[in-house]
Length: 250
Image (cartoon, rainbow, N blue to C red; front, side, top):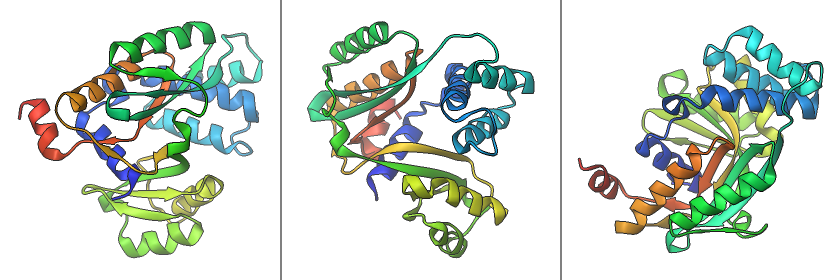
């Protein structure tokens, strides 16, 4: 199983879904705003904005909310100015973390993230602490019924995807960054519905953690993810199904 598949499985097993945390709209709005600021407000000429708007519509975000977020990004209306900052850190057992944030106050964000890491037996590091252990990839998730192996090989890999993986009830397609939008368009043209698609940091290798270390790693991910400025968190640890059942008390 690829490094990404392991981390995706961890996120799935631990149930850390943004929608359950009431943070999804905030994250989507920030992504729309920053996408519009960086690439303009035309969704046809801005692939990142097009994906952000599609994600927002998929969560039933009102059209006027989407438009306000775009206009804040392009400067048509005033609003808070966010910048993207990537933080790197270490967790228990030598695990490595990358934290994508959108913040209007770097000093506040870095101070608060440092406290979170320290509280969970970790440390916030400088640039280069963890990034070397990850590859930047496009990750596209589909419901199992949305496609089959032959179609994924023909359409996704044919469009430039690196690989696809059977995740049980889902397919997961990984792409180079430069092939991400092309692969999405190819799937769309083939009438294949995607469940989720985003650029992620995929761990090159995963570290197995057990016992107390596993519990602390999960708690650290939860605590980071709860922070208002955090968009995404990625880590390079893996926990077995048996260990997850023990932790969850099943």
